[in-house]
Amino acid sequence: MIKIYHNPRCRKSREGLQLLENSGKEFEIIKYLETVPSEAELTEIINLLEITPIQLVRKTEKIWKENYKGKTLSDAEIIKAMIVNPKLIERPIVIYKNKAIIGRPPSNILEIL
Image (tube, rainbow, N blue to C red; front, side, top):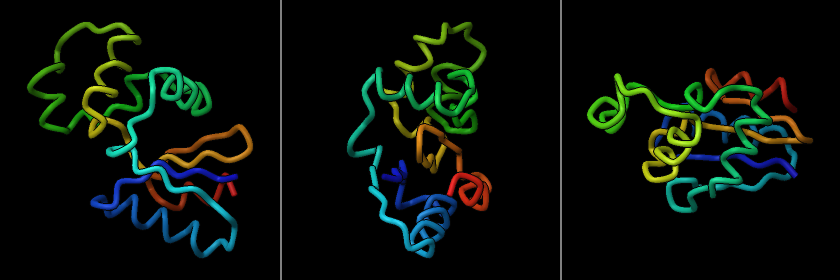
C-alpha cells in the first residue's frame, strides 16, 4: 500500500495528497506531526529515499536555524533532531513498493506511482 507522510498545513503536502487521491489507488495518510516516526522508521525512510539524513531536513525552519545550524552533527544526531522536532522533516514523503520520494515539487510523486 502507498503511504504518504503528510502535513495538512503545508500547501505542497496538500497538493501531493491531491495527486494520490486523483490516482484512484489506495493509500494511507500518516500525519507525521501527530504520529512521529520512530528512529527505525525514519532511518528506513532515509534509506528508501537513498539520501543522507541532512538531505531530509528543512533547513529554513526556525527550529533548525536556532538550534542546529552551523553545528557538526552525526547522522544519528540529525535523525534524533527530526524525531524531537518533526517539523524539520521535509514533506510530503510518499512510499510505494520499497521506493520513496519527496513530493517537492508534488509532481515528483507521479514518478513513484
